[in-house]
Image (cartoon, rainbow, N blue to C red; front, side, top):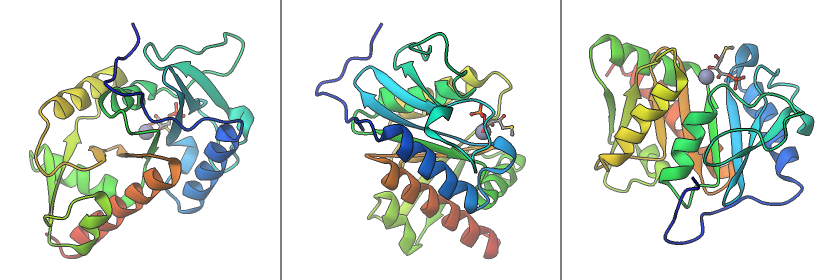
Length: 215
Ligand SMILES: CSC[C@@H](O)[C@@H](O)C(=O)COP(=O)(O)O
Ligand SMILES: [Zn+2]
């Protein structure tokens, strides 16, 4: 079954998509956010196709050959002779399904966001609230308040994706284009790869500031 949207979903088409994914991956790796093959990135290349990083690849050396086209509804590879798509494809698909204007998703194991999410989960919280910081505007919020879900890192990834869908369905106030997974990492999305990366940077920096202030 394919996703249905009121208007055509945003896409990031073109022959450059694989090269742009590889470039974005190497950039995030250089920041120390994709250690030990962690992290995954994707773009929506057409309404029913996602191009996503292959599973288990060194994200610091990613090339266009390390990407896989998958069906946007099922997450299954379009060709059966290519590499295996990211183990976390289902989380990307949940974001694309919910946000038609999103055309890129990045997931990283950035240290401050991961540490903050883990600390909050350890305190029994399922959200992190960021107040006051100017940087909140970078995540599209002009009211000075951002609430980010802290999802449980279930061993079955589709269960994390299902929890993300539940959060989206709640249409929470003060939400932004980001989510956290406790003891795991952060996911951000945007209209293109650059914006998705910017959103991830904002979340990582907000997390760093929050930990610095011991809030
Ligand atoms: C280095 S283990 C990290 C993985 O379990 C996972 O969390 C991750 O981010 C990368 O998975 P991948 O299947 O390579 O996209
Ligand atoms: Zn991960």
